[in-house]
Length: 183
Image 1 (tube, rainbow, N blue to C red):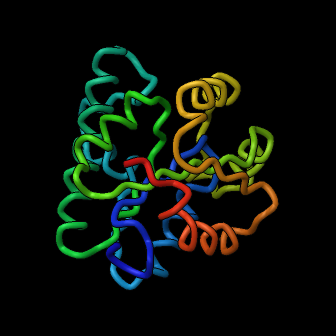
Image 2 (cartoon, rainbow, N blue to C red):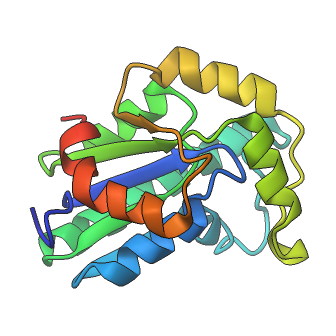
């Protein structure tokens, strides 16, 4: 453990609107030594030629997702090795992608938390975001089914539907190292 009982590397995922950005920002602010790594922000570093994860051409989208995953892991490793808790905010929709992360982060301990407040809550939370941060997404049902099928038995599936962001953060900081450990 690097700081305050938090796992050295904490991956927080979930559907758009699940609360990843808010929760990871608050977690990082509460820990004495932490770095928040946001996959969306990392992807925006590509100025020309960027292809959205579900965009076309599909092979280029997949290549850029893998590039982002590799970069997130390299940054996380650097921060963890320097004594910081790496808090990763990114949609990880499949076991294959999670296994890729765990392999690249090894031998560092990794905890994996899926924020799972439900589709309706995610959709509602997305509508009340600042318009610049809204995510136009109509694939909630498919993504939810895919994530449950691929990742339903991995990490900590945390229903946050009735919790505030602060309550969610308190629980994650206190329990992720035990409930979300994947390696």
